[in-house]
Amino acid sequence: MDCKNLVFVKNCSLLQKKFPDLYAHLLFSDSWRRSIKMPSKKNSEDKLLPDSEIQTLYCYGFERNYGFFLWKNWLKSFGQKLVCIVDDLDEFACFLHQKNSFFLLEDQRVFFLNCFNRDLLIQEVVPVCAEKIAVLSDKRLRKKQKFFRMKKDILEKNFFVHARMSDIFQAPQLWKNFKTSMKRSPRSWDVGKWKNSFHQVPAIICGAGPSIDGHITRLKDCLNRSLVMAGGSAIAALSAQGIVPHLAVAVDPTSSEYSHLKKWAPYSMPLIYSSRLHRRVFSLFSGSLGYMHSNTMWEQSLCQHLHRNFSVIKDDNPQSVSVTTRMLSLAHFLGCNPIILLGVDLGYVHKRHYAHGVPGTLIEKDLVEHPLFSLCNNGQKIATTFAWQLEANALNLFAQQHSSVKIYTASYEGMQMSHIPYLPFEQWKGKKIGPIEEKIKRQIADTPVQVTDSAIEHYFYTVRSSIKTILSLMQISGVEENDDCVEDGMIQALLEKELAYRLFLKPLVSLVKDMRGSSSYGIIIKKYLQQCLKADAPSLKKNHELLV
Image 1: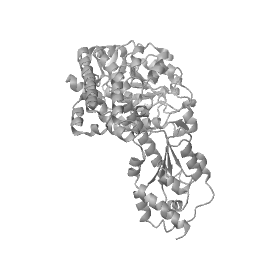
Image 2 (image 1 turned 60 degrees about the horizontal axis):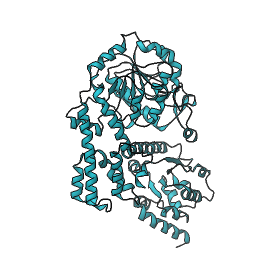
Image 3 (image 1 turned 30 degrees about the horizontal axis):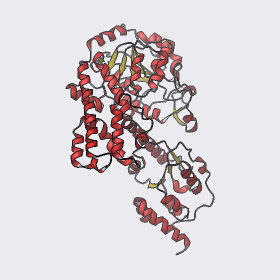
Image 4 (image 1 turned 60 degrees about the vertical axis):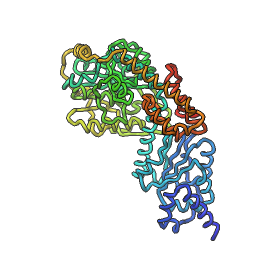
């Protein structure tokens, strides 16, 4: 057997051990017989290697572009994981004939997967922990539809993993938001009781996109022709122009919501809030508050404790919830028709993120380095982000499922949406209707949230006691010193009976087992619960902070 075959056998042996599925595909094909020599000239695509900010790189058609030393240097310098997605078994067999292939095969940070089962591939390549990723390809494959679909699936799955991970690891901070919101509910009105209260009244949903700056005069004239709602940063954008929307909606649990709104505070319009809203935002509003029930796990637990139910304003795509999608669901719930999206650009119009009056109006650095483009209503291409593309998909889905409601976008330079036609805002001729402010005041007076302060306080006291009980059980059973104690059936049964286990630990346990390094499983859980217990717990800025 010649030297070349010895290298091939050695590499195949390691491949069989580490990636048996890919080895089986190779074994039952004729690719290993058709192996040809590697091109000696390196492909210029090696220059596309990502920078230090990328944690994981997915390379589609890796076998066509080796660049051994560049990959090796990237892994050595700052790469955390390299996922090689094989598209061509013939060329992959050629790759296995190369001596330098062995260092990639044996590296624990390098994974080889085949693209023949797309669903299984997407399930395997996306990690439990959310990461900053890049998806690259050989030049010859970059225009193939298979690559575009795979890239979209990987980015989408990672996006949702990031959202899920953020919710789990930031639970102590989200819990503080939840407590602040629900303690205001006894003095709020119940938005769930407003169904069809604005039947066939036109609604204008205002986003904070730059295009809204050109419609301010017309929007002022529409205040007596439609129900005007502003969400999140759009509240600041309209206030900067002297416009007071009929309803403000805020749902963002992060501190950026407060940062965007504080400049033009205080706000006098009614505020509709979700249970996740960042706790500091309430200090910016002097008007009445409306609670919008979202049926989250924590809200379900509270309702069960109170022995009552709230009406849920259904969101048809809960995986892509933004303040705009929530407002669209709300407008439909209220019976509004037609519904006009104004300033919902979903892109960087004039290289700006927000309208005037909102901090952070310049184009983001990440967009310049890793641009995404979509077609806009004027026929041109607009720079956008993956999150905005998902939001456009959610809005499209809603319009498709509610065809009886006329939904339009008035953003000429904004992203084009297949099921939401463009309507020039100047051409919309709404009829004058009665004073909307008076109708809103009557609705608020007739729909109070029927819950008492003492009932809310008792619920949070119950949760706090449950957390303390779990911490005591962990200390008695020695979980901190011995992770196996958590696996003990008796201890596990005791933990699962506790309310705090269902609220906080159940979503965390399986993830911690997969992600932990040298840290003790029990210590991680203890720190987590202590942060949930403390009213002044520090923010979890990084997912891995608990694992150090």
